[in-house]
Amino acid sequence: MQQELSIDSRALAARFPRDFTWGVATSAFQIEGATQQDGRGESIWDAFCRRTGVIADASNGDVACDHYHRWQDDLDLIAGLGVNAYRFSVAWPRVQPLGQGAWNAAGLAFYDRLLDGLLQRGVAPHLTLNHWDLPQALQEQGGWAARDTVHRFVDYGLELARRFGDRLSSLTTHNEPFVQAVLGNETGIFAPGIHHRRTAMQVAHHLLLSHGLALRALRAEGVDCRLGIVLNLAPVEAASDSEADRARARLEDGRLVRWYIDPLLRGSYPDDVWMDLGADVPEIHGDDMKIISTPMDFLGVNYYSRSVVNAGGAVDPKQLGAKVTDMGWEVYPEGLTKLLCRLHRDYSIPDLYVTENGAAFPDEWRDGGVHDVERRDYIARHIAAAGAALAAGVPLKGFMVWSLMDNFEWASGYAKRFGIVHVDYATQRRTPKASAIWYRDFLLGMRRREAA
Ligand code: IFM
Image 1 (tube, rainbow, N blue to C red):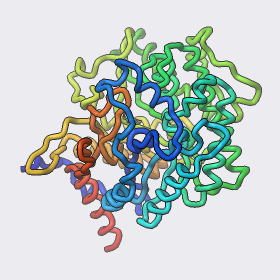
Image 2: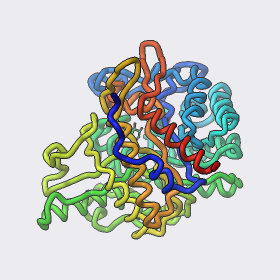
Image 3: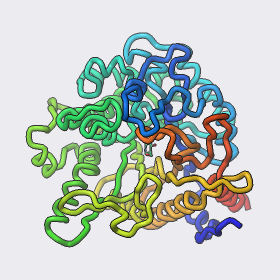
Image 4: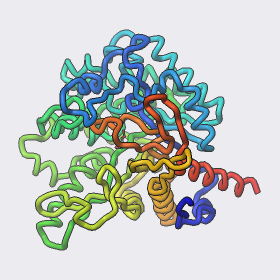
């Protein structure tokens, strides 16, 4: 017997407008595989995976979900879920192996087919230019810490927009600049594996700058799809009312949330974090802040959990007695409502999308199926939290589940499973889990209600 969901799916569906975007999300490096095929160049994640001890199961992206070869079946899977949107990324080194100069016709043709395949199935494509897999050749010239990479990125974005723009519903410049900058260049647990705070802050600045410059170039080119960026955001809460805990929470909020939102939407970095960084502040040129704050059409929010901090730093959610996912992240749906309402209240916000939400849990196989009731409940409760934000007046336009299928979860390798579709990596067999069946039925119910 499958455990019942405590949320009434019909009542939940009724909270969302007809034109709401419902999707699933993936990224290139996490699913494509075929890293050495058809002229693809090397990415920083290919190089990083070769280091000893950095990926939990010593795996890499060489095969991943073999999506590069199985894309047609995967598109059928997506269409079968009844979603109207698919968020995916282009692997820059697949289409431009060195990150500058020659384009790779075979790589471009892959995405060309993917876009047509989505449109034929009635699914709107939402393309991300940079979901972390920078060409290694550019890293060897300084990577995102080098100002020249900003211009290489704009050229790359323009080329893709010229070829694909008229088939896209949206184009996102970057996924999660915080993660790329800080985890990649300060803590070094992600590619390129650098441990240097000043480099991290320069990387963050160049990611934001390249976003603004790309927006200007794409608009000048007349690209008519919606343009935006995706941030990983979370409410940062103090563990107690003590002055010390509250001060630390404010600083952490500055580092994670305001350092990205403020320049994008207000044109300046937050003073408190700037002061705290001391000599590690980034180098900024004349018009940079104006460029970064170029108006965008939407902001994508990736939400998974909140962060609770005391004066000493992050508090382990288990100490709070909270339910956690397989990543050790607290299950905290109300944080999504709070976060979206705060963005709406404190900033002049463009349209908002939840561009990622989902959870890793160990999968329970029974009677030939995966009964992932924890993942199903997690997603349903977060959709309810998104609905609450919508009811409070937040201009929320869409919700995308992370992820379509189990995939390469970066430093965790294949050990953590976020998919609503199970992937057997030995056979590449895909099996929709209970969460996928619930999502499909939820969307089906909504369409029936609309048709009635
Ligand atoms: O898998 C990642 C994704 O690539 C970016 N956002 C968070 C997900 C889960 O960790």
